[in-house]
Image (cartoon, rainbow, N blue to C red; front, side, top):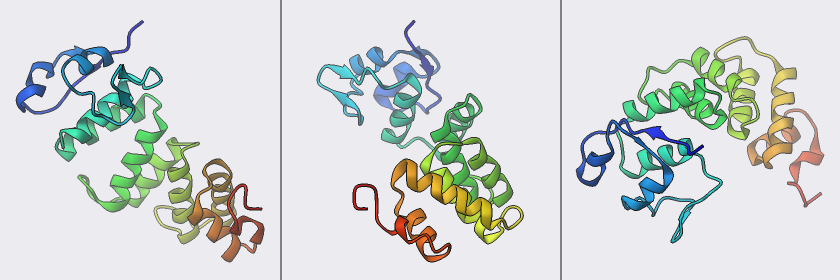
Length: 174
């Protein structure tokens, strides 16, 4: 079926017609939200989920951080790895929520497979922040991030901290 998503944003002009209801990606396009990344003149990217489009919309209309956190939290709880990583970043930095490295670490754990989450969780494990220091785990997380997303920070840490110099170059450079 067609995916829909609720729009928990404040009343701002054009967006006000969509508040509180459920809207499909095609309805967003008809309402003029076609300038979002991943959209083209034919409408929304058919690969983009309703959740992806909602997150892009919230960013576009500069929704309050509280609304973004509420949406991303629900998406993370439903298994969206990118949203779990984003919430982890909020807790790590103290953006919109109190800074809490234990919570950041827990959120990054739920984002298993997200390159950013793997890198940031590796940093927390390496430094012993938000939990115990675990260099073996940090190394494994950095390796996974480097392999999945050619993450430059993870490659650098693997080469410098763990002596795995072959990671110093990115994929295709080896």
